[in-house]
Image (cartoon, rainbow, N blue to C red; front, side):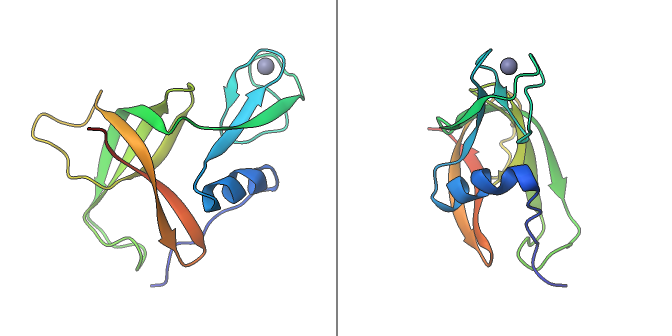
Length: 130
Ligand SMILES: [Zn+2]
C-alpha cells in the first residue's frame, strides 16, 4: 500500500523546512498581522503580499475530530484520529491526534504539537496538553 506522501506546493517549502526542524512556522501578514494558513502569496484578510514566517507557539484547541478505521497508508495504521485544531495564532490545521479520545470527547480540549519522524521527514501531530 505504501507510505503517505507529503504534498508540497510552491508556497509550502519554507513551512515543511520548519517542520523538519521541529519548529513549525506559518506566515504572518506584515500589514495586518493575521496569520496565514495554508501558505499563500497574499493575505486573505488585506491582500498584502508582505509576510514573515513565524514559529508557532505549538498550542491550540480541538475543533473537531474524525477516526479513520480503514487503512490507506502503511505508516498510518488504523484506527487513528485526525483533528481540526484552531491554533492559538488563529488558523485551523488538520493533524493527527496521537492520544485516544476521552469519554467526554476531544472538542474544546487543549493540545500541543509534537513531531514524528516519517520516511520523508518530520510530521507534525498533536497530543492533549497536561
Ligand atoms: Zn494582511
